[in-house]
Image 1 (tube, helix red, strand yellow):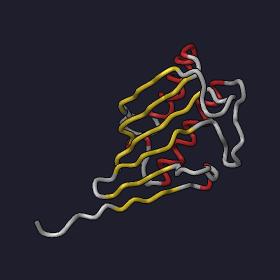
Image 2 (tube, rainbow, N blue to C red; image 1 turned 135 degrees about the vertical axis):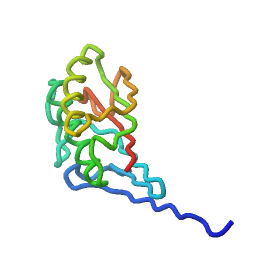
Image 3 (tube, rainbow, N blue to C red; image 1 turned 60 degrees about the vertical axis):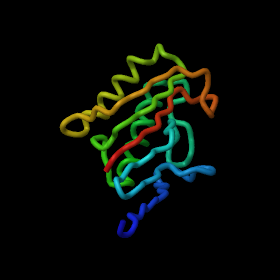
Length: 138
């Protein structure tokens, strides 16, 4: 074999998502380009919770953060290949789906990644109601 293909890994922390403690918001892998996005919660740029006790507001903020993360890697909702969604209460599923559908229709054709959705007893912050991690290909 002649030579090896090199893989470049870039850790990206867009200022709009704040400074994470001990992890990267986005990891980009080149040479097939797969982007791994850390679980996004309803935190704003200052690291403050948006929408305490308001699932719809939290879901909108999570998708805003996901869009920022995708954009930082030169991607959009169309680049998503996998989402893992964590809900504190499955009764919020219809509201999640409304927010998700609005987000997916921001691109043409609308994004349709594979999705795993689970109900969990808690997330890392006591007031978080939703968290989404993602994998994109660019």
